[in-house]
Image: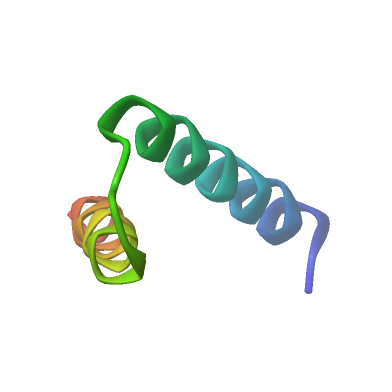
Length: 44
């Protein structure tokens, strides 16, 4: 994995964490849904 890939992965993880804290999912499925939405948005 390149340095750029590592940095982008870290940013994606930080974004997911921040959004999860704002949305406050109640269970794992809701958390998974948030992560999936972020993944789909990043494909655009």
